[in-house]
Image (tube, rainbow over all chains, first blue to last red; front, side):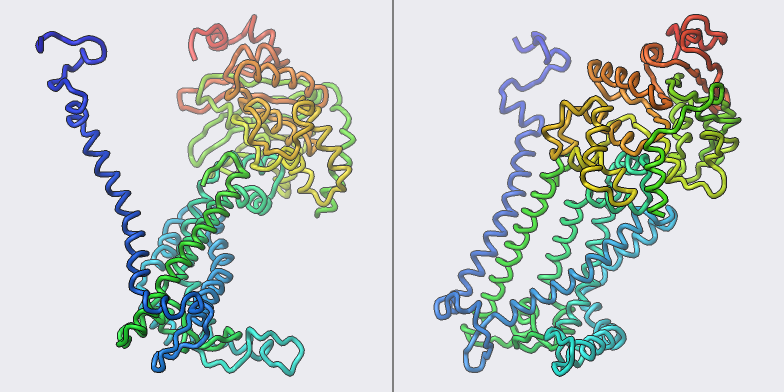
Length: 335
Length: 277
Protein backbone atom coordinates (compact mmCIF):
# COMPACT_ATOMS: atom_id res chain seq x y z
CA UNK A 1 0.00 0.00 0.00
CA UNK A 2 2.74 2.41 0.94
CA UNK A 3 4.20 2.31 -2.51
CA UNK A 4 0.89 3.14 -4.19
CA UNK A 5 1.10 6.70 -5.47
CA UNK A 6 -1.43 8.79 -3.58
CA UNK A 7 -3.87 10.99 -5.41
CA UNK A 8 -4.60 14.68 -5.62
CA UNK A 9 -2.26 17.26 -4.18
CA UNK A 10 0.17 14.81 -2.77
CA UNK A 11 0.98 13.06 -6.03
CA UNK A 12 3.73 15.51 -6.84
CA UNK A 13 5.85 14.63 -3.84
CA UNK A 14 4.75 11.62 -1.79
CA UNK A 15 5.37 11.95 1.93
CA UNK A 16 6.82 9.28 4.16
CA UNK A 17 4.65 10.05 7.17
CA UNK A 18 0.93 9.64 6.95
CA UNK A 19 -0.52 11.04 10.21
CA UNK A 20 -1.46 14.73 10.39
CA UNK A 21 0.77 15.38 13.41
CA UNK A 22 3.69 13.64 11.79
CA UNK A 23 3.31 15.74 8.69
CA UNK A 24 3.05 18.97 10.68
CA UNK A 25 6.19 18.07 12.62
CA UNK A 26 8.00 17.32 9.41
CA UNK A 27 6.98 20.70 7.94
CA UNK A 28 8.10 22.47 11.08
CA UNK A 29 4.65 23.95 11.64
CA UNK A 30 4.21 22.76 15.20
CA UNK A 31 7.70 23.49 16.53
CA UNK A 32 7.58 26.89 14.89
CA UNK A 33 4.21 27.71 16.40
CA UNK A 34 5.31 26.57 19.85
CA UNK A 35 8.46 28.69 19.71
CA UNK A 36 6.77 31.93 18.65
CA UNK A 37 3.88 31.49 21.09
CA UNK A 38 6.30 30.88 23.95
CA UNK A 39 8.31 33.94 22.94
CA UNK A 40 5.21 36.15 22.94
CA UNK A 41 3.97 34.72 26.22
CA UNK A 42 7.34 35.43 27.83
CA UNK A 43 6.87 39.16 27.11
CA UNK A 44 3.53 39.09 28.89
CA UNK A 45 5.08 37.00 31.67
CA UNK A 46 7.89 39.52 32.15
CA UNK A 47 5.44 42.42 32.42
CA UNK A 48 3.34 40.60 34.98
CA UNK A 49 6.43 39.37 36.81
CA UNK A 50 7.87 42.86 37.17
CA UNK A 51 4.52 44.21 38.34
CA UNK A 52 4.04 41.47 40.92
CA UNK A 53 7.60 41.80 42.20
CA UNK A 54 7.21 45.56 42.64
CA UNK A 55 3.84 45.06 44.34
CA UNK A 56 5.20 42.53 46.85
CA UNK A 57 8.46 44.36 47.58
CA UNK A 58 6.67 47.63 48.27
CA UNK A 59 4.38 45.96 50.81
CA UNK A 60 5.76 47.72 53.89
CA UNK A 61 5.05 51.20 52.53
CA UNK A 62 1.71 50.28 51.02
CA UNK A 63 0.52 48.84 54.33
CA UNK A 64 1.55 51.87 56.37
CA UNK A 65 0.85 54.71 53.95
CA UNK A 66 -1.75 53.38 51.53
CA UNK A 67 -2.75 55.70 48.70
CA UNK A 68 -1.70 58.67 50.81
CA UNK A 69 1.87 57.91 49.69
CA UNK A 70 1.08 59.38 46.29
CA UNK A 71 -0.17 62.69 47.65
CA UNK A 72 2.30 63.08 50.55
CA UNK A 73 4.85 65.82 49.96
CA UNK A 74 7.46 65.09 52.64
CA UNK A 75 10.43 62.83 52.01
CA UNK A 76 12.60 62.39 55.08
CA UNK A 77 14.15 58.93 55.26
CA UNK A 78 15.96 59.67 58.55
CA UNK A 79 12.70 60.16 60.44
CA UNK A 80 10.91 57.57 58.30
CA UNK A 81 8.57 59.96 56.48
CA UNK A 82 7.95 59.02 52.85
CA UNK A 83 5.85 60.90 50.26
CA UNK A 84 6.09 60.53 46.49
CA UNK A 85 4.43 63.67 45.17
CA UNK A 86 7.60 65.72 44.60
CA UNK A 87 9.03 62.94 42.44
CA UNK A 88 5.84 62.39 40.48
CA UNK A 89 5.64 66.12 39.84
CA UNK A 90 9.30 66.15 38.84
CA UNK A 91 8.91 63.32 36.36
CA UNK A 92 5.80 64.82 34.79
CA UNK A 93 7.13 68.36 34.55
CA UNK A 94 10.51 67.41 33.08
CA UNK A 95 8.84 65.10 30.54
CA UNK A 96 6.42 67.85 29.61
CA UNK A 97 9.23 70.37 29.07
CA UNK A 98 11.01 67.79 26.93
CA UNK A 99 7.94 67.23 24.76
CA UNK A 100 7.16 70.93 24.39
CA UNK A 101 10.67 71.56 23.10
CA UNK A 102 11.40 68.33 21.21
CA UNK A 103 8.11 67.85 19.33
CA UNK A 104 8.16 71.04 17.22
CA UNK A 105 11.93 70.81 16.84
CA UNK A 106 11.98 67.13 15.95
CA UNK A 107 9.04 67.44 13.61
CA UNK A 108 10.76 70.34 11.89
CA UNK A 109 13.89 68.27 11.34
CA UNK A 110 11.76 65.36 10.13
CA UNK A 111 9.92 67.56 7.61
CA UNK A 112 13.23 68.92 6.38
CA UNK A 113 14.72 65.44 6.00
CA UNK A 114 11.66 63.97 4.29
CA UNK A 115 10.51 66.84 2.09
CA UNK A 116 13.10 69.54 1.55
CA UNK A 117 16.54 68.03 2.01
CA UNK A 118 18.60 67.43 -1.15
CA UNK A 119 18.71 63.67 -1.73
CA UNK A 120 22.44 63.33 -1.21
CA UNK A 121 22.32 65.06 2.20
CA UNK A 122 19.38 62.99 3.45
CA UNK A 123 21.33 59.86 4.40
CA UNK A 124 24.23 61.54 6.24
CA UNK A 125 21.93 63.97 8.09
CA UNK A 126 19.52 61.21 9.04
CA UNK A 127 22.42 59.11 10.24
CA UNK A 128 23.66 61.92 12.47
CA UNK A 129 20.22 62.36 14.00
CA UNK A 130 20.03 58.64 14.72
CA UNK A 131 23.53 58.79 16.19
CA UNK A 132 22.19 61.16 18.87
CA UNK A 133 20.23 58.20 20.20
CA UNK A 134 23.36 56.11 20.51
CA UNK A 135 25.14 58.48 22.92
CA UNK A 136 25.13 56.95 26.42
CA UNK A 137 22.94 58.66 28.97
CA UNK A 138 25.84 59.36 31.33
CA UNK A 139 27.67 61.21 28.56
CA UNK A 140 24.61 63.42 28.10
CA UNK A 141 24.69 64.06 31.84
CA UNK A 142 28.35 65.04 31.85
CA UNK A 143 27.87 67.19 28.76
CA UNK A 144 24.89 68.77 30.48
CA UNK A 145 26.91 69.73 33.55
CA UNK A 146 29.96 71.07 31.76
CA UNK A 147 28.61 72.46 28.50
CA UNK A 148 24.84 72.56 28.16
CA UNK A 149 23.94 74.14 31.52
CA UNK A 150 26.54 76.94 31.43
CA UNK A 151 26.12 77.78 27.76
CA UNK A 152 22.40 77.23 27.15
CA UNK A 153 20.35 76.55 30.28
CA UNK A 154 21.89 79.37 32.36
CA UNK A 155 21.23 82.14 29.80
CA UNK A 156 17.73 80.84 29.02
CA UNK A 157 16.87 80.41 32.70
CA UNK A 158 18.26 83.82 33.63
CA UNK A 159 16.29 85.44 30.85
CA UNK A 160 13.07 83.73 31.95
CA UNK A 161 13.70 84.60 35.57
CA UNK A 162 14.49 88.26 34.86
CA UNK A 163 11.57 88.67 32.46
CA UNK A 164 8.77 86.73 34.12
CA UNK A 165 10.11 85.71 37.52
CA UNK A 166 9.85 88.94 39.49
CA UNK A 167 6.66 89.00 41.54
CA UNK A 168 6.86 92.79 41.95
CA UNK A 169 6.65 93.42 38.20
CA UNK A 170 4.08 93.15 35.45
CA UNK A 171 4.18 89.71 33.84
CA UNK A 172 4.78 87.48 36.81
CA UNK A 173 4.66 83.76 36.05
CA UNK A 174 5.40 81.60 39.12
CA UNK A 175 6.88 78.94 36.83
CA UNK A 176 9.95 81.12 36.35
CA UNK A 177 10.49 82.38 39.89
CA UNK A 178 14.10 82.48 41.16
CA UNK A 179 16.53 81.74 42.57
CA UNK A 180 18.20 79.90 39.73
CA UNK A 181 21.56 78.16 39.92
CA UNK A 182 21.56 75.94 36.85
CA UNK A 183 20.63 72.48 38.12
CA UNK A 184 16.85 72.51 37.81
CA UNK A 185 13.70 71.00 36.27
CA UNK A 186 14.42 73.22 33.27
CA UNK A 187 17.93 71.79 32.83
CA UNK A 188 16.62 68.21 33.11
CA UNK A 189 13.74 68.91 30.74
CA UNK A 190 16.02 70.45 28.12
CA UNK A 191 18.53 67.59 28.33
CA UNK A 192 15.61 65.17 27.94
CA UNK A 193 14.46 67.14 24.91
CA UNK A 194 17.84 66.57 23.25
CA UNK A 195 17.69 62.89 24.18
CA UNK A 196 14.21 62.20 22.78
CA UNK A 197 14.79 64.34 19.69
CA UNK A 198 16.30 61.48 17.63
CA UNK A 199 13.39 59.16 18.44
CA UNK A 200 10.76 61.69 17.42
CA UNK A 201 12.71 62.82 14.34
CA UNK A 202 13.65 59.42 12.97
CA UNK A 203 10.18 57.89 13.30
CA UNK A 204 8.36 61.00 12.05
CA UNK A 205 10.68 61.11 9.04
CA UNK A 206 9.93 57.48 8.18
CA UNK A 207 6.21 58.12 8.59
CA UNK A 208 6.37 61.19 6.33
CA UNK A 209 8.34 59.30 3.70
CA UNK A 210 5.66 56.60 3.76
CA UNK A 211 2.90 59.04 2.76
CA UNK A 212 1.95 57.95 -0.78
CA UNK A 213 3.27 60.04 -3.64
CA UNK A 214 -0.26 60.15 -5.01
CA UNK A 215 -1.32 62.27 -2.03
CA UNK A 216 1.36 64.85 -2.73
CA UNK A 217 0.59 64.83 -6.45
CA UNK A 218 -3.10 65.34 -5.71
CA UNK A 219 -2.26 68.46 -3.75
CA UNK A 220 0.29 69.83 -6.23
CA UNK A 221 -2.08 69.00 -9.10
CA UNK A 222 -4.65 71.56 -7.98
CA UNK A 223 -2.10 74.28 -7.41
CA UNK A 224 -0.85 73.82 -3.86
CA UNK A 225 2.52 75.25 -2.94
CA UNK A 226 5.03 72.97 -1.27
CA UNK A 227 4.17 74.43 2.13
CA UNK A 228 0.42 73.91 1.58
CA UNK A 229 1.06 70.36 0.44
CA UNK A 230 3.13 69.52 3.52
CA UNK A 231 0.94 71.32 6.02
CA UNK A 232 -2.51 70.43 4.72
CA UNK A 233 -2.03 67.03 3.11
CA UNK A 234 1.16 65.26 4.16
CA UNK A 235 1.09 66.07 7.89
CA UNK A 236 -2.61 65.24 8.42
CA UNK A 237 -2.09 61.97 6.55
CA UNK A 238 0.86 61.11 8.77
CA UNK A 239 -0.71 62.35 12.02
CA UNK A 240 -1.29 59.01 13.73
CA UNK A 241 2.24 57.86 12.98
CA UNK A 242 3.67 61.13 14.28
CA UNK A 243 1.66 60.71 17.48
CA UNK A 244 3.22 57.26 17.79
CA UNK A 245 6.66 58.85 17.51
CA UNK A 246 5.79 61.33 20.25
CA UNK A 247 4.62 58.49 22.51
CA UNK A 248 7.90 56.64 22.12
CA UNK A 249 9.72 59.88 22.95
CA UNK A 250 7.55 60.37 26.02
CA UNK A 251 8.25 56.82 27.13
CA UNK A 252 11.97 57.49 27.04
CA UNK A 253 11.60 60.82 28.86
CA UNK A 254 9.57 59.28 31.69
CA UNK A 255 12.08 56.59 32.45
CA UNK A 256 15.37 58.34 31.71
CA UNK A 257 17.54 58.21 34.81
CA UNK A 258 21.25 58.93 34.63
CA UNK A 259 21.38 62.20 32.69
CA UNK A 260 18.46 63.59 34.68
CA UNK A 261 20.02 62.65 38.01
CA UNK A 262 23.16 64.52 37.02
CA UNK A 263 21.51 67.84 36.15
CA UNK A 264 18.31 68.14 38.19
CA UNK A 265 19.88 69.00 41.56
CA UNK A 266 18.40 66.10 43.55
CA UNK A 267 16.35 67.98 46.12
CA UNK A 268 13.04 66.47 47.16
CA UNK A 269 10.86 69.52 47.23
CA UNK A 270 7.60 70.46 45.65
CA UNK A 271 8.11 73.71 43.81
CA UNK A 272 6.02 75.74 41.44
CA UNK A 273 9.15 77.04 39.72
CA UNK A 274 10.78 75.18 36.87
CA UNK A 275 14.01 76.96 37.77
CA UNK A 276 14.34 75.29 41.16
CA UNK A 277 16.21 72.02 41.67
CA UNK A 278 14.16 68.86 42.13
CA UNK A 279 14.02 65.14 41.70
CA UNK A 280 12.30 62.68 39.40
CA UNK A 281 10.99 59.23 40.22
CA UNK A 282 13.72 57.45 38.33
CA UNK A 283 16.51 59.63 39.67
CA UNK A 284 15.53 59.29 43.33
CA UNK A 285 15.56 55.51 43.01
CA UNK A 286 18.96 55.53 41.32
CA UNK A 287 20.43 58.01 43.77
CA UNK A 288 19.16 56.70 47.10
CA UNK A 289 18.91 52.98 46.57
CA UNK A 290 22.46 52.37 47.81
CA UNK A 291 21.80 54.04 51.14
CA UNK A 292 18.34 52.62 51.85
CA UNK A 293 19.25 50.54 54.89
CA UNK A 294 15.82 50.13 56.46
CA UNK A 295 12.99 48.00 55.01
CA UNK A 296 10.67 51.03 55.11
CA UNK A 297 13.14 53.10 53.06
CA UNK A 298 13.75 50.53 50.33
CA UNK A 299 10.07 49.64 50.26
CA UNK A 300 9.23 53.30 49.67
CA UNK A 301 11.71 53.50 46.79
CA UNK A 302 10.25 50.35 45.27
CA UNK A 303 6.76 51.77 45.51
CA UNK A 304 7.99 54.78 43.56
CA UNK A 305 9.20 52.28 41.00
CA UNK A 306 5.77 50.66 40.99
CA UNK A 307 4.12 54.05 40.46
CA UNK A 308 6.48 54.82 37.59
CA UNK A 309 5.66 51.44 36.07
CA UNK A 310 1.91 52.02 36.35
CA UNK A 311 2.21 55.60 35.14
CA UNK A 312 4.15 54.55 32.03
CA UNK A 313 1.61 51.83 31.30
CA UNK A 314 -1.26 54.24 31.74
CA UNK A 315 0.24 57.01 29.61
CA UNK A 316 1.11 54.56 26.87
CA UNK A 317 -2.42 53.19 26.93
CA UNK A 318 -3.85 56.68 26.74
CA UNK A 319 -1.56 57.54 23.85
CA UNK A 320 -2.47 54.32 22.00
CA UNK A 321 -6.10 55.28 22.39
CA UNK A 322 -5.34 58.68 20.90
CA UNK A 323 -3.52 57.13 17.93
CA UNK A 324 -6.40 54.73 17.43
CA UNK A 325 -9.04 57.45 17.46
CA UNK A 326 -7.05 59.50 14.95
CA UNK A 327 -6.39 56.63 12.57
CA UNK A 328 -10.02 55.56 12.79
CA UNK A 329 -11.00 58.83 11.17
CA UNK A 330 -8.84 57.91 8.17
CA UNK A 331 -10.02 54.49 7.03
CA UNK A 332 -7.10 54.34 4.63
CA UNK A 333 -4.45 54.02 7.31
CA UNK A 334 -4.11 51.87 10.35
CA UNK A 335 -1.75 52.47 13.21
CA UNK B 1 -0.43 87.49 -3.67
CA UNK B 2 -3.49 85.89 -2.19
CA UNK B 3 -5.66 88.72 -3.40
CA UNK B 4 -4.31 88.38 -6.89
CA UNK B 5 -5.00 84.67 -6.88
CA UNK B 6 -8.51 85.23 -5.62
CA UNK B 7 -9.03 87.76 -8.36
CA UNK B 8 -7.85 85.30 -10.99
CA UNK B 9 -10.27 82.77 -9.62
CA UNK B 10 -13.28 85.02 -10.00
CA UNK B 11 -12.24 86.12 -13.48
CA UNK B 12 -11.77 82.61 -14.78
CA UNK B 13 -14.82 81.58 -12.79
CA UNK B 14 -16.80 83.28 -15.52
CA UNK B 15 -15.10 80.87 -17.93
CA UNK B 16 -12.89 82.44 -20.55
CA UNK B 17 -14.17 82.62 -24.10
CA UNK B 18 -13.32 79.69 -26.35
CA UNK B 19 -10.06 80.06 -28.18
CA UNK B 20 -10.55 81.44 -31.69
CA UNK B 21 -11.14 78.73 -34.22
CA UNK B 22 -7.91 77.29 -35.50
CA UNK B 23 -5.81 78.31 -32.50
CA UNK B 24 -5.46 75.35 -30.13
CA UNK B 25 -5.89 75.83 -26.39
CA UNK B 26 -2.53 74.24 -25.67
CA UNK B 27 0.40 73.36 -27.86
CA UNK B 28 3.72 71.61 -27.54
CA UNK B 29 6.48 72.61 -29.90
CA UNK B 30 9.46 70.29 -30.43
CA UNK B 31 9.04 69.15 -26.85
CA UNK B 32 11.72 66.78 -25.54
CA UNK B 33 11.65 65.60 -21.94
CA UNK B 34 14.71 64.34 -20.11
CA UNK B 35 15.30 62.50 -16.84
CA UNK B 36 18.91 63.43 -16.21
CA UNK B 37 20.75 62.50 -19.40
CA UNK B 38 18.05 60.09 -20.55
CA UNK B 39 15.66 61.43 -23.16
CA UNK B 40 12.24 59.95 -22.42
CA UNK B 41 10.22 61.89 -24.99
CA UNK B 42 11.61 63.25 -28.25
CA UNK B 43 10.43 66.30 -30.15
CA UNK B 44 6.69 66.10 -29.78
CA UNK B 45 4.66 68.82 -31.44
CA UNK B 46 1.02 68.45 -30.54
CA UNK B 47 -1.95 70.79 -30.49
CA UNK B 48 -4.61 70.42 -27.80
CA UNK B 49 -7.84 71.89 -29.18
CA UNK B 50 -10.29 73.53 -26.80
CA UNK B 51 -13.51 71.69 -25.92
CA UNK B 52 -12.30 68.50 -27.49
CA UNK B 53 -10.88 65.29 -26.09
CA UNK B 54 -7.40 64.38 -27.23
CA UNK B 55 -6.32 60.82 -26.46
CA UNK B 56 -2.70 59.66 -26.30
CA UNK B 57 -2.21 55.95 -26.93
CA UNK B 58 0.80 53.71 -27.36
CA UNK B 59 2.56 50.72 -25.84
CA UNK B 60 3.93 50.71 -22.29
CA UNK B 61 7.04 52.76 -21.67
CA UNK B 62 6.62 54.97 -24.74
CA UNK B 63 6.46 58.17 -22.68
CA UNK B 64 2.69 58.85 -22.67
CA UNK B 65 2.58 59.60 -18.95
CA UNK B 66 5.79 61.61 -19.08
CA UNK B 67 4.33 63.70 -21.87
CA UNK B 68 1.01 64.41 -20.16
CA UNK B 69 2.75 65.16 -16.86
CA UNK B 70 4.91 67.77 -18.55
CA UNK B 71 1.83 69.67 -19.72
CA UNK B 72 1.13 70.97 -16.20
CA UNK B 73 4.74 70.76 -15.05
CA UNK B 74 4.06 67.84 -12.73
CA UNK B 75 7.41 66.42 -13.86
CA UNK B 76 9.13 69.30 -12.09
CA UNK B 77 8.65 67.21 -8.95
CA UNK B 78 10.99 64.54 -10.32
CA UNK B 79 14.52 65.71 -9.57
CA UNK B 80 16.76 65.78 -12.62
CA UNK B 81 13.92 66.20 -15.11
CA UNK B 82 14.03 69.01 -17.63
CA UNK B 83 12.67 69.85 -21.05
CA UNK B 84 13.66 71.23 -24.41
CA UNK B 85 11.16 72.96 -26.65
CA UNK B 86 7.97 74.70 -25.67
CA UNK B 87 4.63 74.10 -24.01
CA UNK B 88 2.12 76.90 -24.43
CA UNK B 89 -1.31 77.63 -23.00
CA UNK B 90 -3.20 80.30 -24.95
CA UNK B 91 0.14 81.16 -26.51
CA UNK B 92 1.84 81.69 -23.17
CA UNK B 93 5.06 79.70 -22.59
CA UNK B 94 4.46 77.59 -19.46
CA UNK B 95 8.16 76.96 -18.93
CA UNK B 96 9.13 80.56 -19.52
CA UNK B 97 10.98 82.66 -16.95
CA UNK B 98 8.82 84.12 -14.21
CA UNK B 99 5.97 81.66 -14.73
CA UNK B 100 4.42 80.59 -11.42
CA UNK B 101 4.27 76.79 -11.52
CA UNK B 102 1.52 76.78 -8.87
CA UNK B 103 -0.63 78.92 -11.16
CA UNK B 104 0.10 76.60 -14.10
CA UNK B 105 -1.22 73.63 -12.14
CA UNK B 106 -4.30 75.52 -11.07
CA UNK B 107 -5.14 76.38 -14.66
CA UNK B 108 -4.39 72.86 -15.88
CA UNK B 109 -6.02 70.33 -13.59
CA UNK B 110 -5.02 66.70 -13.35
CA UNK B 111 -6.71 63.39 -12.59
CA UNK B 112 -4.42 60.50 -11.75
CA UNK B 113 -4.23 56.81 -12.47
CA UNK B 114 -5.30 55.72 -9.02
CA UNK B 115 -8.00 57.76 -7.26
CA UNK B 116 -6.17 59.78 -4.60
CA UNK B 117 -8.71 61.58 -2.42
CA UNK B 118 -7.29 63.15 0.72
CA UNK B 119 -8.20 61.51 4.04
CA UNK B 120 -10.69 64.30 4.65
CA UNK B 121 -14.44 64.61 4.28
CA UNK B 122 -16.01 64.67 0.82
CA UNK B 123 -16.79 68.35 1.33
CA UNK B 124 -13.24 69.20 2.40
CA UNK B 125 -11.79 67.29 -0.54
CA UNK B 126 -13.68 69.46 -3.02
CA UNK B 127 -13.21 72.65 -1.00
CA UNK B 128 -9.46 72.04 -0.70
CA UNK B 129 -8.52 73.88 -3.88
CA UNK B 130 -10.75 76.95 -3.48
CA UNK B 131 -9.57 77.34 0.14
CA UNK B 132 -5.97 77.63 -1.07
CA UNK B 133 -6.85 80.96 -2.66
CA UNK B 134 -7.86 82.67 0.51
CA UNK B 135 -10.92 82.75 2.69
CA UNK B 136 -14.10 81.96 0.80
CA UNK B 137 -17.47 82.75 2.46
CA UNK B 138 -19.24 79.60 3.62
CA UNK B 139 -22.24 80.06 1.34
CA UNK B 140 -20.04 80.55 -1.70
CA UNK B 141 -17.95 77.51 -0.78
CA UNK B 142 -21.10 75.41 -0.35
CA UNK B 143 -22.08 76.54 -3.80
CA UNK B 144 -18.71 75.64 -5.34
CA UNK B 145 -18.80 72.20 -3.70
CA UNK B 146 -22.30 71.46 -4.91
CA UNK B 147 -21.60 72.71 -8.43
CA UNK B 148 -18.35 70.77 -8.71
CA UNK B 149 -19.86 67.55 -7.40
CA UNK B 150 -22.83 67.96 -9.75
CA UNK B 151 -20.58 68.46 -12.74
CA UNK B 152 -18.62 65.37 -11.71
CA UNK B 153 -21.93 63.45 -11.63
CA UNK B 154 -21.45 62.60 -7.99
CA UNK B 155 -23.75 65.05 -6.19
CA UNK B 156 -26.81 62.81 -6.03
CA UNK B 157 -24.83 59.96 -4.55
CA UNK B 158 -23.08 61.95 -1.82
CA UNK B 159 -25.26 64.97 -1.03
CA UNK B 160 -26.45 63.40 2.23
CA UNK B 161 -23.00 62.38 3.43
CA UNK B 162 -20.72 65.29 2.63
CA UNK B 163 -19.12 64.99 6.07
CA UNK B 164 -18.05 61.40 5.50
CA UNK B 165 -14.49 60.56 4.54
CA UNK B 166 -13.76 60.65 0.84
CA UNK B 167 -11.82 57.45 1.28
CA UNK B 168 -14.94 55.55 2.28
CA UNK B 169 -16.35 55.87 -1.27
CA UNK B 170 -16.03 53.18 -3.94
CA UNK B 171 -13.16 53.39 -6.41
CA UNK B 172 -15.29 54.90 -9.18
CA UNK B 173 -16.86 57.41 -6.81
CA UNK B 174 -13.41 58.31 -5.50
CA UNK B 175 -12.23 59.01 -9.03
CA UNK B 176 -15.26 61.24 -9.69
CA UNK B 177 -14.52 62.97 -6.36
CA UNK B 178 -11.01 63.64 -7.64
CA UNK B 179 -12.49 65.07 -10.82
CA UNK B 180 -14.78 67.30 -8.73
CA UNK B 181 -11.75 68.37 -6.70
CA UNK B 182 -9.91 69.26 -9.90
CA UNK B 183 -12.74 71.29 -11.46
CA UNK B 184 -13.51 73.13 -8.20
CA UNK B 185 -10.65 75.53 -8.95
CA UNK B 186 -12.05 76.26 -12.45
CA UNK B 187 -9.15 75.00 -14.54
CA UNK B 188 -9.00 75.58 -18.29
CA UNK B 189 -7.60 72.19 -19.24
CA UNK B 190 -8.05 68.78 -17.61
CA UNK B 191 -5.35 66.15 -17.92
CA UNK B 192 -6.30 62.54 -17.24
CA UNK B 193 -3.53 60.01 -16.80
CA UNK B 194 -5.17 56.60 -17.32
CA UNK B 195 -8.12 57.62 -15.15
CA UNK B 196 -9.97 54.32 -15.51
CA UNK B 197 -7.16 51.80 -15.26
CA UNK B 198 -7.98 51.07 -11.61
CA UNK B 199 -11.76 50.97 -12.12
CA UNK B 200 -14.30 48.31 -13.04
CA UNK B 201 -16.22 48.51 -16.38
CA UNK B 202 -19.33 50.13 -14.89
CA UNK B 203 -17.34 52.85 -13.18
CA UNK B 204 -15.31 53.27 -16.38
CA UNK B 205 -18.44 53.93 -18.44
CA UNK B 206 -19.56 56.54 -15.90
CA UNK B 207 -16.25 58.37 -16.16
CA UNK B 208 -16.42 58.25 -19.96
CA UNK B 209 -19.94 59.71 -19.95
CA UNK B 210 -18.70 62.37 -17.58
CA UNK B 211 -15.87 63.24 -19.97
CA UNK B 212 -18.39 63.88 -22.73
CA UNK B 213 -20.14 66.37 -20.43
CA UNK B 214 -16.90 68.01 -19.32
CA UNK B 215 -15.61 68.56 -22.83
CA UNK B 216 -18.36 71.13 -23.35
CA UNK B 217 -16.34 73.39 -21.03
CA UNK B 218 -12.77 72.14 -21.04
CA UNK B 219 -9.96 70.97 -23.24
CA UNK B 220 -9.28 67.39 -22.14
CA UNK B 221 -6.18 65.28 -22.67
CA UNK B 222 -6.38 61.62 -21.73
CA UNK B 223 -3.66 58.98 -21.66
CA UNK B 224 -5.07 55.51 -21.99
CA UNK B 225 -3.88 51.97 -22.41
CA UNK B 226 -7.28 50.99 -23.61
CA UNK B 227 -7.67 51.53 -27.35
CA UNK B 228 -11.42 50.98 -27.26
CA UNK B 229 -11.62 53.77 -24.71
CA UNK B 230 -9.68 56.12 -26.96
CA UNK B 231 -11.94 55.17 -29.88
CA UNK B 232 -15.11 55.68 -27.80
CA UNK B 233 -14.37 58.99 -26.10
CA UNK B 234 -11.84 61.03 -28.03
CA UNK B 235 -12.06 63.45 -30.94
CA UNK B 236 -8.35 63.29 -31.72
CA UNK B 237 -5.90 60.52 -31.10
CA UNK B 238 -2.14 60.70 -30.88
CA UNK B 239 -0.09 57.55 -31.32
CA UNK B 240 3.23 57.29 -29.50
CA UNK B 241 5.96 54.74 -29.99
CA UNK B 242 9.37 54.06 -28.52
CA UNK B 243 12.31 54.65 -30.83
CA UNK B 244 15.37 52.36 -30.87
CA UNK B 245 17.15 54.84 -28.53
CA UNK B 246 14.23 54.33 -26.08
CA UNK B 247 12.92 57.88 -26.43
CA UNK B 248 9.18 58.15 -27.05
CA UNK B 249 8.06 59.91 -30.22
CA UNK B 250 4.66 60.80 -31.58
CA UNK B 251 4.28 58.96 -34.86
CA UNK B 252 0.79 60.00 -35.80
CA UNK B 253 -1.88 62.45 -34.67
CA UNK B 254 -5.23 62.93 -36.37
CA UNK B 255 -8.98 62.46 -36.08
CA UNK B 256 -9.78 59.47 -33.93
CA UNK B 257 -11.86 58.12 -36.77
CA UNK B 258 -8.85 58.23 -39.11
CA UNK B 259 -6.45 56.64 -36.65
CA UNK B 260 -8.70 53.67 -36.13
CA UNK B 261 -9.90 53.19 -39.71
CA UNK B 262 -7.25 54.57 -42.06
CA UNK B 263 -4.00 55.05 -40.14
CA UNK B 264 -1.21 56.47 -42.24
CA UNK B 265 1.60 54.82 -40.33
CA UNK B 266 2.04 51.06 -40.59
CA UNK B 267 3.02 50.86 -36.89
CA UNK B 268 -0.21 52.58 -35.87
CA UNK B 269 -2.17 50.14 -37.95
CA UNK B 270 -0.38 47.19 -36.31
CA UNK B 271 -0.99 48.64 -32.86
CA UNK B 272 -4.67 49.53 -33.19
CA UNK B 273 -5.44 46.22 -34.87
CA UNK B 274 -3.81 44.45 -31.92
CA UNK B 275 -0.90 42.92 -33.79
CA UNK B 276 1.57 44.09 -31.11
CA UNK B 277 1.87 46.22 -28.00
